[in-house]
Image 1 (cartoon, one colour):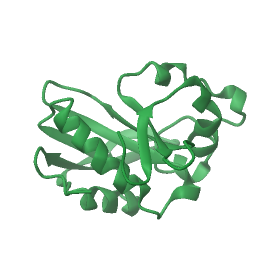
Image 2 (tube, one colour; image 1 turned 180 degrees about the vertical axis):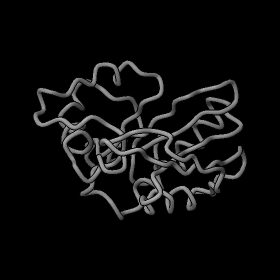
Image 3 (cartoon, helix red, strand yellow; image 1 turned 90 degrees about the vertical axis):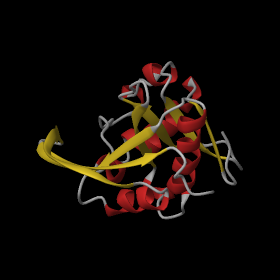
Length: 168
């Protein structure tokens, strides 16, 4: 998949360093993206992600560097949930909005989904803004759905149906 500035494709074993730098060792990312913190690159094993059907790298088209990930999970016959994380040094540049719009097209056209969900912690207003820019709207609130970083966390869910993704 390609956008104006990004390539979205499968993770490879060579992405381990970028995954470590931009996801599992980036404490700002880990405040909002559920992932295990890694102190050292040697602690990161992405082999399960490389072999995962639902996990993709978000790469800068110009350099090929992996700056984040986007994935789908909890797949049912006509719906799934999507999640994304991007290195904090790449925040506020529109990359996630660009990636999510493209990924939604993939899920609706290639994976034949009819509805796609996404969730965020209530304090993560940036993720909410991305979802809204991509045509998603409020679906439901889930109190104390999970424990993350030792805290019971609420989640807000947004959803979108096929045919409602704004043009890139």
